[in-house]
Length: 483
Ligand SMILES: O=C(O)CCC(=O)C(=O)O
Ligand SMILES: [Fe+2]
Image (cartoon, rainbow, N blue to C red):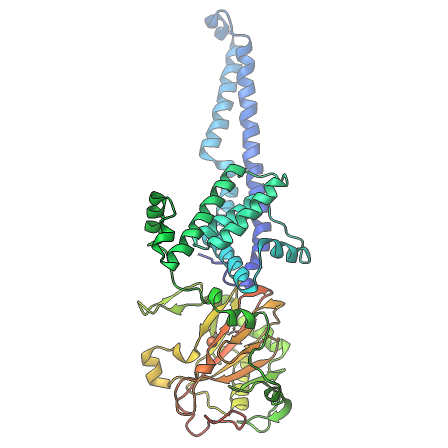
């Protein structure tokens, strides 16, 4: 089954899918209508007869012309009805309609897009009005009250009552302005009251003050407390951590003027290959994060995307409880691995990575390509932690990450380091490099990083994770602090 929302590249297909589906639906309707015409003609032929029922049926039927007419008519009706029952006329069009329907998004996609919207609202502090204002400059999309109602209901099912209330209020506003809708004002007011109530209960019960809780109607309180027990209370990093939000909106934190002076731009030869020249920019000093401009060409980007596209599948995370790979809202993207044997461009990029870092890639992972979805993100994590035990034994930890940006992102999608205060904006063709492990092999706490939700645009990246084994004599470059 296709999942659309986790990759914007995949989402673009929906425009073609919509056109294709409309076409086959139109053909099906045509077939059904021509069938209905046939049936209508048959019916009216029958009714003609009944208009003037013969007074003496036996005499009437003994007239061979009348007999012929009656038999012929009834036979035609039989043929028309039989054709309908067998479905011969619409069979082909129905089959193609069915296969076109296979490609349509499912309810999970609608939920996925709504939850992405909520995530964007959390991080970029948007209420329904702001989001609509934004869309006025971008294709002028406006939602009707039934659509905003749907968003509110899905938000509440996911326990995001704050946003459920905002969207329900927006629905009410639209209805009050006289917009047409299927949903009634009564329903909206009822849901609004229920969401507000649940929000109040959550706020009260999180403070654990019994006296305040008792202010609520006891029966209602017990039933809500019962339902709360089944909720997922895992803290939503994004909504609690202001640093993450600030960084995602493009602010750099903790930077001082003295430190700022160290952030320079220069031409330099590769650490591993002195024949290669790179445009290096020091993006951050503690820890060192370097950016290389014009690291991959437009043509290389096109080739990489074309190779990756058919292989993209939902990126997984390791479930801490079961240890199994699962899809999660903390990582919304599709990814694919590309081996250097697949195309000369991949081995060329790999050689360039070896050339710039001075590290050997024998133990490195293959190039991972990722395309993010709407609101696509990757919550704060350490790359060094993302390997399983046996793999870790074999190649060591992820000593360094090279992240290649293969697109600009209009709004959102920065790579941020909450501990260090750095925010890197994706810039097409550039690559960034940082170390996840210290010289002594321990994890560098400052390497915690995240991919902020993509608000507008399609974000494509390529990751190269370089492993510790084999680097003993190579690490490390002069600009990277020895620590
Ligand atoms: O896409 C980004 O900006 C960062 C991705 C990342 O951290 C990862 O895939 O491990
Ligand atoms: Fe990462």
